[in-house]
Image 1 (tube, rainbow, N blue to C red):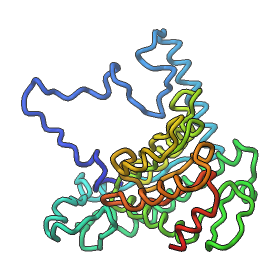
Image 2 (cartoon, helix red, strand yellow):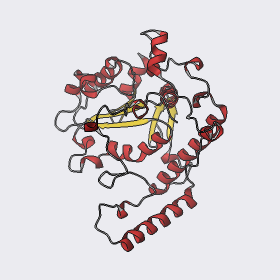
Image 3 (cartoon, helix red, strand yellow):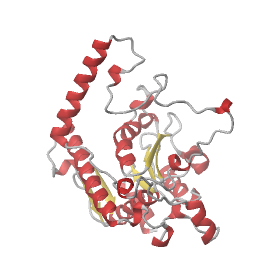
Image 4 (tube, helix red, strand yellow):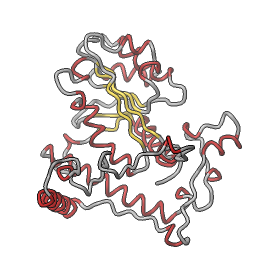
Length: 316
């Protein structure tokens, strides 16, 4: 999808003078991340033409095998073809906000059909139907890949998530969520897709959560970013995952600063039970996350503190 709050679609690419020429992103001096091109055939590598061709051929074969087994993204928008080369209209949220007043904030999901210009993708039933079909197929492929890597079959209980009403016992699966939290997460994702917005995921915790002893990008929250960022991108969102865990201190000091350290969030994880054991620090972390945001109320996720703290917050 194109248009909306996604920063790519709001960039001003006009150049005022020759001294501010934009870089040619296709130039070999810049990394051009195209999954069709083998990173082992990069122009910056000292390879002969024959070696580069061999690397690219091997890469193409691997892509073909993956697509044969799992399928591939096959979404196309025919708007330009059907409208004599014209680009599809997009939403200018700043203009919409000016018309509706200062209190209007699409980031909070305060949107309605009248916000979208005629022929915007959000108003095109055919576009949306095709997009949803390809989106579901994409999610299915990613899930199948994850299950296969862990040696699970689709539907295995140990790979699932339990949706609970707040009183049921925790049984099986890799995680559980309250039913209300799952519904809120669905709404957040739908709003971010409709407005092409960022989606912020932040981890607070102790040294094990921070991944001390590994490379920073090997921490589990950044592994989540590596796997899920391309999926969010295909669905029109910008996933931003932050590892703000730290050893020796836990989360209490950072939580007292609220969004000053943890920033705005859509999904927050607490993983500090090894150093903050009695629940009080987790309680502060969760409450500050709920109260501190300027425009987002996050989904809260506990990574080991215990169901009791979460139950208490839900009841309140």
